[in-house]
Each structure stands twice: as C-alpha cells, then as structure tokens.
Amino acid sequence: MYTFLTKYGQLVSLGIGVLIIVAFYLTAVGSLPEGFDTLPKADQFATNAFNIGLSGAIVLLVVAAAAWLLFSIFQVIKNPKGSIKSIIGFGALLALFFVLYAMADGDVSSPLYEKFQITPTQSKLISAGLSTTYIALGAALLAFVFSEVRNLFK
View 1 (spheres, rainbow, N blue to C red):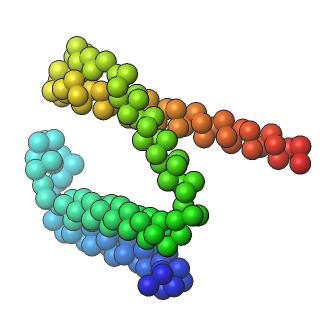
View 2 (spheres, rainbow, N blue to C red):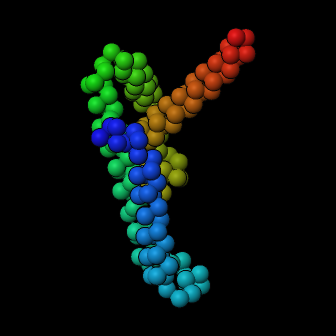
C-alpha cells in the first residue's frame, strides 16, 4: 500500500478532488432555482444545492485526518528511535498548551462571548489555543530567520 501511495498517491488524490468538484458543479448548477441571485438571503441559505460540495469537503477532511493519524502511528511503531524528536516536540507543544490553559482567566464579559454563549471553559480553551498558535508561529519565524542568517555565513 505504501509503495502504491508513494507512486500514485498524488494522482489518486487529484482524481478524487476532480470527481468531487465535477459532482458539486453538476448538482449545484442543476438544482439551483431560477433567479437564485434575486432570492432573499433566507431562501438562498435554505437551498440544498451546495450540500454535495460541503459533504465532499467534510469527507475529505475526515479521510485526510484519519490517514495522517494512522500513518503517524504506523511510522512511530515502525521507527520509534527516529520518531523520538517528533514525540518530544509534540509533548512540548501539548505541555505549552496546558500551561497556557492554566494561565487563562476565562473571562466571558465580552458581548461577543455572550452572543455565542461561550462558557468560561471554552474561553480558556480559545485563549490557550490562540496563545499556543502565536508562540508556535513566533518560534517558526525565529527559526526561519536564524537558519537564513546561518546559511548566509556558510
């Protein structure tokens, strides 16, 4: 299976993507009511013309996430010594997230939080997720700049 995916994986994924696009286009064009652009917004949202495109995107997302998870586990089992850096990095990222979650205040006094009914726990998760993303982005940018400066002097 690995050899097949290595050789034809991109072609297979491209083909599946094209099939979903064609199916979406045919169903969307065929099921759009006459004068769709002139319909009120509520009626436009009530149409089922775009369901196959949304369903296809969701299915592809789930398949990609499952494939990533399965191949990651397979790679760790196959080569645990070579995967140790990735495991340590993932553990550090997870530890950073939990530290930032513990430090978050969970304030929900914003009108936006009230509008979407966000609980203090959800607020802490959002805050920790955003902070982790910002720190990881900053670290990636610093690593990029450092590697470019280092390569400049090589």
